[in-house]
Image 1: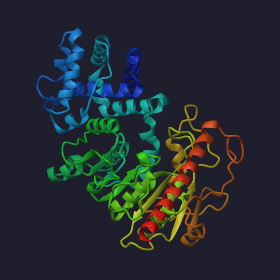
Image 2: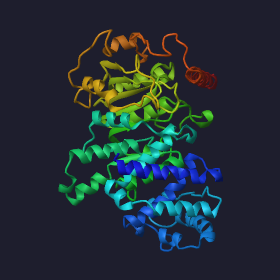
Image 3: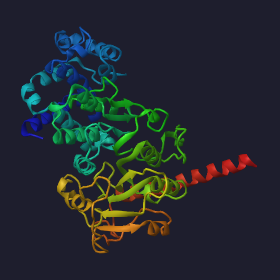
Length: 480
């Protein structure tokens, strides 16, 4: 991000102080700012035809200060049902968190004072992503749950090498980070100006996502729009549940890159999909089924998943076996702890390619341990792209994992395990071999929040096993 963009992001972020007296949270502030920025940016970019007449930035600004807040609230409701598709989706069920007319006037005045010429020159998309990152890094906002570290996204995308014309999907799109990074990669490696009109239209429609949380969906749509990836046609991020029949409507993909939500399905219920062989309330295992089923033959995927997916027994083991049959699961990257919003969450990236047939595609697996003996990441030690450099070199230049690789042995970070060795581990993919001498590892006293999160992970795994057992007993009882 440029210095100019950083300065504008800082100014916009500092406006949240204006709303503190109204009891507005950080996340509510970013949502409120999205409404106002959409109106302002429509004016600045000459796209006000998306908005009905009488409901635009100048119309809001022209209201007398005492009546402006009431007019603004009416405007939000109206825009939820009028205007272009993206306008109606961004303002769907919109409501203002502002209580005082003076607060709204202060925000409008501050937004007007920004150097929008420089902002447009530097890139409005970068500006908005900067705001989303600020929001995710602010623990009080609770937004980190659907924000994947940008450096991790960029590393994954560079390894997966998205291509022009490919159908690219993120079934848990959040604020759109993976889709936008894929778009950046394609733009960097292709001359889009040389495309025919038909080819350019196909490019605009090759990105597909779905998001179940309406607030995140709103932010994601705004993010895509500011990166010139509008959803006024069939591309973009849809509002819906990928674990329901809505997920079956997403197109088969050449590439899926995603970080599904952690935890169990709300209420403990099973996904309402009728195409899952292994029903489970564990959202990550359910998303994993969606992902490998949604790939075209030869399609590739990179997905961020917590450790429990690697070792959970019963239905977890069934899903891993099904994955290794239908796909070539070629690489697992064990990620450092502390890089997500919950400090104790241990995560991995699984890289796999859908086979031409549905049996025996995984003959062996490479595991890279980037967790053992790594720093405690946070504000003092930020995660950077350099931390992934050695892994990217070891992974090689082939997105399907076919590049020549070197097993570094028990003292190194990159090792190969045959399918038989995995089977001998009861198909557990939770494979570690390095002695971890970092703080909080191997018996050292870890932070209370880390221990608490690990306990929660273990309890959730046990609960999922009990649910699976109860389901099995229920089936047997019905048959008797």
